Each structure stands twice: as C-alpha cells, then as structure tokens.
Amino acid sequence: QRPAILIARAVFPEVVARLREHFEVETNEQDAPFTPAQLIERLQGKVGVMTTGSERIDAALLAACPQLRVAANIAVGYNNFDVPAMTAAGVLATNTPDVLTETTADFGFALLMATARRICESEHFLRAGQWNRWALDMFAGAEVHGSTLGILGMGRIGQAIARRGAHGFGMNVIYHNRSRLDTGSEAACRARYVSKAELLQQADHLVLVVPYSAESHHTIGAAELAQMKPTATLVNIARGGIVDDAALAVALREKRIAAAGLDVFEGEPKVHPDLLTVPNVVLTPHIASATLPTRLAMANLAADNLIAYLGTGQALTPLNPSVQAGQGR
Ligand code: GLV
Ligand code: GLV
Image 1 (tube, helix red, strand yellow):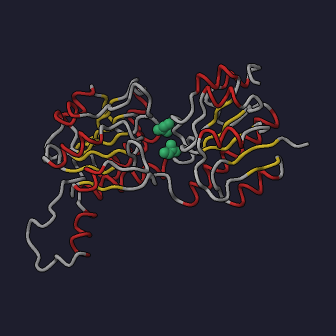
Image 2 (cartoon, rainbow, N blue to C red):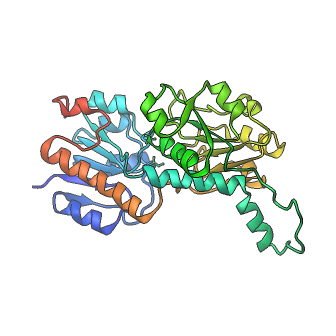
Image 3 (cartoon, helix red, strand yellow):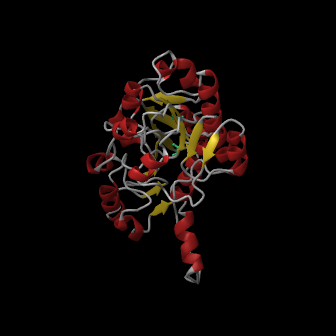
C-alpha cells in the first residue's frame, strides 16, 4: 500500500501525474476551498498534504489528523501554517522560496509603475469614452526613474526589487528590515539601511515585502501613512493585514498619499468596499507570482518536497528542519 496524500486545491495535471507515481493521490477537482472540517475529513489516513494559502494547518487539525506527517505549501508565505504547532506535533512544513523571487519582483515593479504612472485610472477613463481632448497635465503621475525607492522587508524578493530599481531605473534605494543585510548584499542591490521612520518619510515609492505575522499586523496604519509624503506611492505585494486597509482607503481619499497598488488584502478574496470606490488605487487579485512557468515551478517544488520527505526523510525547502532530525511523526 503506497502512502496516501491529499492535494487540497487543483494543480497542474503533470504535477498530479508525478505525484501519482509515488502516492495514492486524492485531488479536489472542483477546486472549491475546503472548510476546516472538510479538510480534516479529507485528511483521514493521509500522510501528506499539498496546500495553498486557503488551507490552515493548526493545532486543532494536527490533533484530528494523527497520520499527517508533512504539509507542503505552494507559496513562499506560510502564515496559513502554525509552524510551532507543526513542529511540536512532529509534522514537517515546507514552502516554495527562490523559484518565484524574480517573477514576484517583476510584478512588484509592474504594480509600482502602474500605480505611479496612473495606468489603470487612465485606461478606465479612455474605455469610458471620456477622452475628448488632450491636456498638458492629464494623468500626470509620479516620477519613477531617479526617485527614492523604499523597501520594507529585505528578503530575497525585496532584494530583487531593489536591484531592478537601482540598476534599471537609477533609483536611490533605501530599506528597513528586522536585521540589516551584510555589506556585500547591500552593495549588490545598492540599498541603504534606514530606520522605519526614515523609510516612511523619505520614500517616493514604498514597497512592502514583509512576511505576515502577529507582529507585522497593520505595520502600515493611519500613523505610518501620516508620516509618508503626500506625493508617495504605496505598493503591497506581501500579505493582506500588513496594511490597515480601512485607514489606507481614508488616506487615499483624502490624498494624504498619492496612490496605492495592492495585490493582497485583509480577508481576501473580499476587498474592503472603500478601496473599491477610490480612484487612486490599483487592485489585483493576489497574482504577483502568477506566470505559468513560475506557478508550475512552485507546484513542482511542493511535489518534490512531498516526494523527498516521504521517500528519504529529507525535504528540499523545510521550514522546521528539526522535524527531519528524528523529531517527526
Ligand atoms: C504568495 O503569496 C506566496 O506566498 O507565494
Ligand atoms: C520571502 O521569503 C522572500 O523571498 O522575500
């Protein structure tokens, strides 16, 4: 009897086929997210699960699924995992770093540019038949090249965005992070470490790339927005909940900052209704890593983690490697 796994959401057929070479595989062809109770039910008898951000792996689930040994998230972010609870239960957690770094940085830059240069707002205007004549200051946006790019969260993706800004657009790059980069890494992305207050005050464009946790909840709220330049652009490609969406909608409406580009939202797929009515915000449905090659690479890495851990006891990108060192179920 081969080990049984659950693929919690629809993934590419070639990835399912690879997993079927190793496991008894249950899929979710409808692709409707499971409720916590449904997920527990589906996981009975399963040793592995491939998850996305819509599945929560917490202490209650772990207690109810005693056979589960590994959860492989198809995402670099893993705030849907209670990693300490998984470690305590001896369940391995894995994510998909690296394979999405450059693609996600591309999108961060695309969202920055669309927001700063008012691409979506002006496109709506044109589509609505409102373009009757040209005007010198029509949709005049913010300068991107040569401006100051602020990055909050200087992990792999933050550094990839910094490189684009510094080398491609001649931007002055400043960043804040829990820990400062080594000087070699700072030099590679031509980024200067500043305090959070300096970052907020000096950035012309502020990109958020911090992981979500209880500590990063509402990292950007009314008080932080008030410190930013009235001409500034804010871009969030990290996680919903890093920004206080209600406070941001107020700041945008009152033009306390110029514009925002958001790929992630508190409580997504619901979007705060006030954000839907302000014009100076670009809204996208959590697609920063969404190119076909990258989404395929993410699903394949999650599959490789399941195959490797359940086959050899060593995953490729474990989040709690102590579980591999004999602490596992
Ligand atoms: C997407 O948001 C991810 O964390 O990969
Ligand atoms: C996050 O883990 C990143 O790659 O920036």
